[in-house]
Length: 172
Image 1 (tube, rainbow, N blue to C red):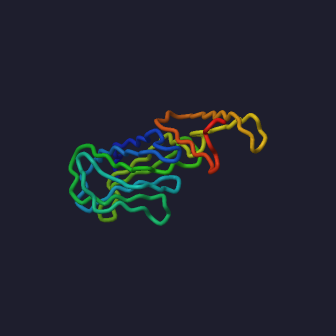
Image 2 (cartoon, one colour):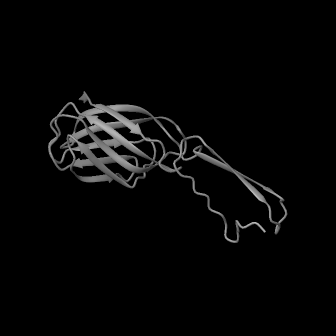
Image 3 (cartoon, rainbow, N blue to C red):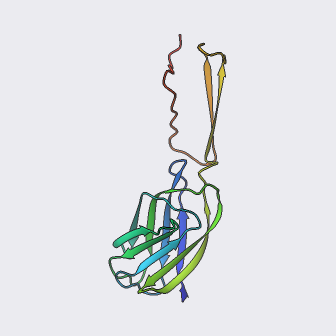
């Protein structure tokens, strides 16, 4: 079994919960049609969609095993040489940030052809955003000033604030 050239790129969180994962692969061996790439995550995986682009771009299935940790992408075409990317959209980040180990293998007819273990830094669901609200006066039913302080541990393009029903931004 030879080592596969691979890199897992985890994009900064798209929302406070999810990230885009891109796995760049350059296997040593060719992968015949209906061969597969298997990725084993150390946490339960949940994602919106997956895709392929590059030296191979067509797959017949992208399935998550019942353990919710092993993802198998079955190729619908032969792979001979070059780099291709597997993208996973809106992956729910693990509950704890840190360095995780992800296993990647190429498989054909039940035989592991290439394999590698990757250490990668992942973002967490927690610690991406915190917010505090300070209000004066604090008495119910009185008009007042509300200060919302938002602290981000990561860059954000958009922040959406939802207010409970009955809140009126109009000053009297």
